Length: 92
Image (cartoon, rainbow, N blue to C red; front, side, top):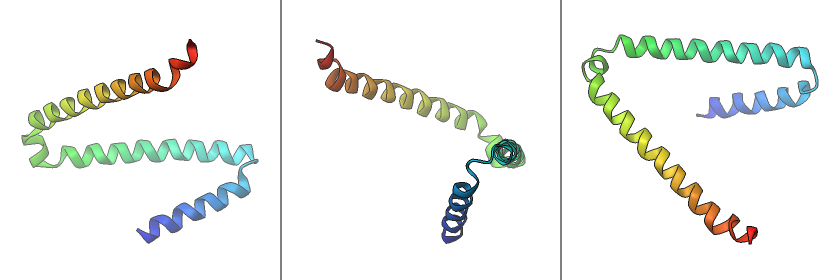
């Protein structure tokens, strides 16, 4: 965990020094996208080679859909309540 914090801090400090150099920022952006794609590919590879996940894929998928639906519904409900409680009064 300390390694993660050190690397994050180092990245922030270096980013602060180079934040006005657009050519470096474009390169870093492309490198970030490439890294994300590589990590997603490796995650898919890891899931595809795991027999336990493949055997229980239907149950995992159903659970994932259930969690997603309730997370979205909860977010919509909380957003609606926040709007009613804090912003609708200001419209009157």
